[in-house]
Image (cartoon, rainbow, N blue to C red; front, side, top):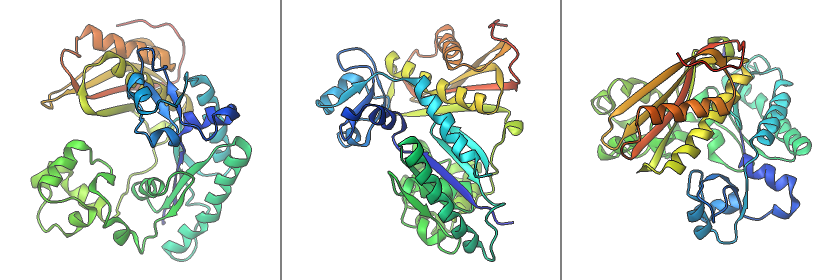
Length: 357
């Protein structure tokens, strides 16, 4: 059976909520994070602020210099999480199978509702449904969302990234190969900064270059080669991950420049903990194991973990244990290329007390 997958991504979610709640901020460059006069980092930025080069994890002082007229707002994670729950409720009313990826994005499987004759006819059936979703989110929540429609997760995500903000893009099965050809290789799932550099050095800069490459990509990217070739042609059989199938939840961030700035690392860890907590609560799970992962400039990668007796779900607990691991193991002994946080050994939460084993 043909799959019909939607990827929904809220537009500048944190900043958009602040602009909605405070009319004085509408149309202004909004920066969610510590003020530039204090030691802190940016959690999120509105599209108006992004035009000045302001991005998440940027030092607040730097953001203030880039955007001197920016409006700095303290983050309100409880508010953002509540808004996320309300939007998820709207999505659930479609009857779709839902995989919530983070506080502001989700995959929806509408295959059961969209089964016309021919693959592209089924995908086109999802177009008015996606428009209705966007309309409800705008009218009921005062926010905008971008949606991508395709036959798999890979293409649906690429489609949602194609036209932001407030976009709606469908990648048909008949046109997926030609749609992908001019796009940079980094749009493909699994192609991070390091893999992108390897491919560029081999003269492979676009997805079309990968499609035309006659050699074995394993010579460049190892065992990922065959899967990368499939992705280049828009093929992806990954299922949606549902609560009873998830064994672990994690989040990673590769920094543009290696850093050992504690403020940047703490902000990154805090955001990752919030994302992980939202997924745990969505699936009604708690975690017994917390793990941190670091990668240094020479690509040396280390992971460390600890166990807790009672399952945890709260972001503050996950963040605290992640910080504890980084400090106890002295993992920030030199600048980091990558920082990751994860949880595993998932169970239904039964208590709140933390007991280190």
